[in-house]
Amino acid sequence: MFRGAPKPWRRRPGAVWPRLPDKRAPDAPEAHRGLLASGESRSTSSLLNCYDLRIPDWTRLAGASTVLTGLAVLVLATACSRSDPAGAAANVTPGASAPALKRERYPLTGEVISVDAAAKTVRVRHDEIKGYMPAMTMDFSVADADAAVARAGRRIRAEMVATTGDYYRLEKIWPDDKAAGDAVAAGALQLRQDTHNRGRSAYREIGETVPDFALYDQSGRVVQSARFRGRQIMINFIFTRCPVVTMCPAATAKMIAVQKLAREAAVPNLELVSITLDPAFDTPGVLKEYADVRGIDTANFSFLTGPESAIKDLLTQFGVIAEFEGELLKHTLTTLLIDENGKISHRADGSAWEPKEFVARMRR
Image 1 (cartoon, rainbow, N blue to C red):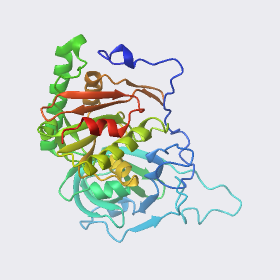
Image 2: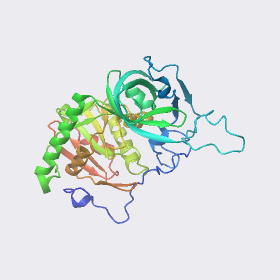
Image 3: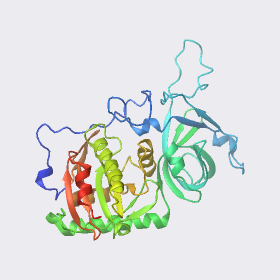
Image 4: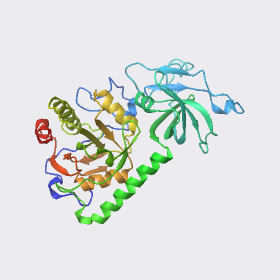
């Protein structure tokens, strides 16, 4: 629980806390992306493995100077699972059990050389992966949204997933450009110092100015709070794996409704911002997929993520509780309206607020 959060947002008796989808059972088939009929949102980690790319063992390519090409993308059926691609068990004796897949994860850094969005692959000139493979250029399978976010020339850090049969995939992809990283790190440090200096008064009341911050948006671009000066802003906090329909899914639906009503009312200079409560999981690519699946117009609607310390300090200063207990993320909901001068003009807690109420408070 974060210090500085006011008492009105403490857990109430009978409150329902969202439980994350169970990571321990990743082999359950996925009927489709997004919300299931029950209202539960599957973990994106399951969806990210719908496509695998088979490439030769690097040890058989020692001394080769050419880029690994001629790679085959194996597209699974709509019921995606973390099962071995078709053909991997072709030599298994009938009636015998197929050998269990072995997955190993390694941290990877490197530069994107090219992107094939249609094939959902990226070619990366990666640095040495200590204890596994030397520096080289090779292709990796990625999720749809990660392929859409990837840019040639951008440095990245990610987790490389090496699977039995020489299948390689990148997950948890983050921008790793020095300038962008320095800007986000500086913003996190400034926010940390500000929260510390405010002490017990860290919580910002209506009428106070919002703190400065620097985070990544759903496209991997750095977004600094100064960008919003002179604009009206609505800010809320959600996470993509939230399975309780009355929590984050409801909050997102209401932000979408505000966007529509504000346009109809000709509200000028409006920006909508959703900041993740789960930055370890919600990478730029995951946030992009979250927006794409829901058909969200991101022209003036940004989804932000970044260092955990920066997110925690923002939650403290805005009076939002979010803490993990194992796989359980306990959190409250808060939506804020910020005026053109960067001051908090209105806030609503929970998800019972009406979009028209916020639009009515916006300057025309």
